Image 1 (tube, one colour):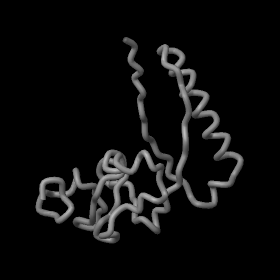
Image 2: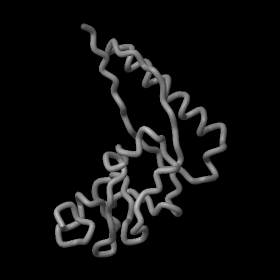
Image 3: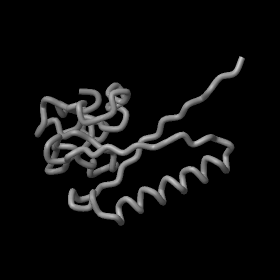
Length: 125
């Protein structure tokens, strides 16, 4: 019996809203897709597709952790958490894998893994 291994990968690019509609941004993504396809081909893996979604940092309080550079939601600023309507339906359960909870500590925005356990949103709190 054959089995198919389907691999999902998440990555991010931090951009200004004004850059979204620029040709240079589209070109950057096309070049990235070409490089990813070549890399897959070199390892005998069939590249199927990629997709991009945009998440507003202001609306969702999504930030880059100042310690480890993971994406996080600052739950001190957005206690309700992530609005999954702006994401892929099949990735809703995966949001905790690529957008961690987090908060503010000692003037820094930190993900749950970098916050001290005593912080409300710390990993082991």
